[in-house]
Amino acid sequence: MRVGVYIDGLNLYYGGRHLCGRGTHGWRWLDVAALADRLIGRNPDWSAKQATARRIMYCTALITGGPAADTRERQQTYLKALLATGRVGIEEGTFVTRRVTGGDIAGGVRRTIMVREEKGSDVNVASHLLIDLHSGMIDAAVLITNDSDLRLPARHARLHVPLGTVNPRGTPTAAALRGKSGDGAGGHWWYSLTADDFFSCQLPESVDTHRRPDRW
Image 1 (cartoon, rainbow, N blue to C red):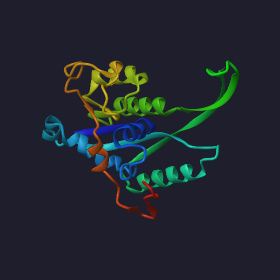
Image 2 (cartoon, helix red, strand yellow; image 1 turned 45 degrees about the vertical axis):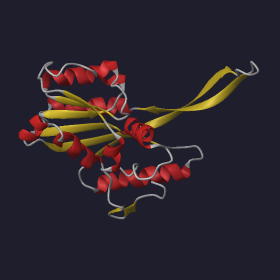
Image 3 (cartoon, rainbow, N blue to C red; image 1 turned 180 degrees about the horizontal axis):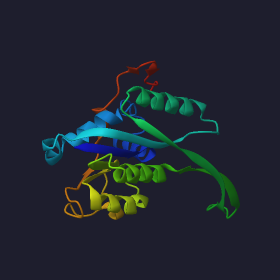
């Protein structure tokens, strides 16, 4: 049973930060292939069919601009480490900076601030899921996100293959991503990550020439 795993990288990151704590070490150097294996293995029906992660797509946005040079460097190190495992593909979106003007609650003064928004990850997740589905590359899929914008791709995928929907935050799954296990092709499941999922699925300290950043 060939499983495709499609990951909203920033959604996963913020889920880990929520579950594990922003200042906590030991969860950011996440081995997403090991996490995929763990998620697939916890489903007895899929295990009985010898399900394996044949394709893992990690969709994220590259940090650019601004003062966060060290943050960009750590992100690049992590992405290179994922690629070096030989099991993960990466699709890159972007951050867009826009001006937002609003009132100062204290003094009623209107102020303009710069807001950075991630663009493209949800579209890339949906695109890879549907392309792989309709090209016959996968027999089942795992979607790691809690972004309700992926409601339609998830619903469509369930018509054709079993779909596991994984909420990275450990909170209730977005209503738009819920369904019934017997919908469409059937065999669907839902799961919310725990802190242990992050801590238990870490890359080695060094992957090829790429080493876990300090404080990670």
